[in-house]
Image (cartoon, rainbow, N blue to C red; front, side, top):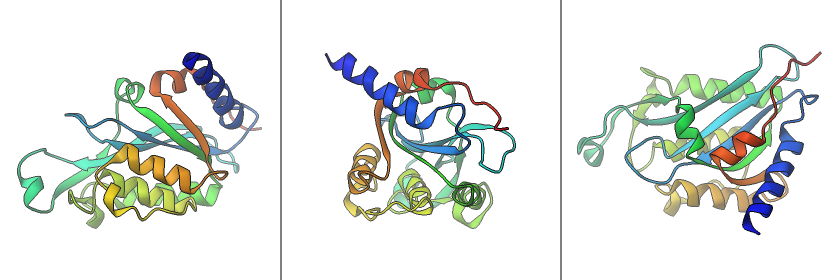
Length: 191
């Protein structure tokens, strides 16, 4: 029975966000259970801007460049991470939202601002981490209820709380990466 619900949810997500006739970029927020692989929170961008152009199908997160005890002592070098397909497949898609072109451009500026060597590329475990990065993307796309201080080191719990705060504004996904990715149709150029 659980599989039937997951398949129904996958179809709903597909029909709302992956229709080839739709020309827009969808942002999907993901979590990966804590472990030795990073980032534990990230987002994907998929689709074609309304204004046209090259299709996008990528994901990005933010993490420390090196995992060491220095993380516990203070700021360390951070950087963007493009999780590999196997990592994404093993993660959990929490919710998605179709962006305007202006929001998409603002998310790209966020990615640029947090890239290597930029002032925002400093990683701090307590307040400038992978969850903070997805929080900023969520702010850009107009989501509310983003201040969850007790959840800033708990990616899945944080994203579930943000989803609950934005019920009716986001499309709940709640699928393991393999199931979600299998539900997506190919991206096509808009006419």
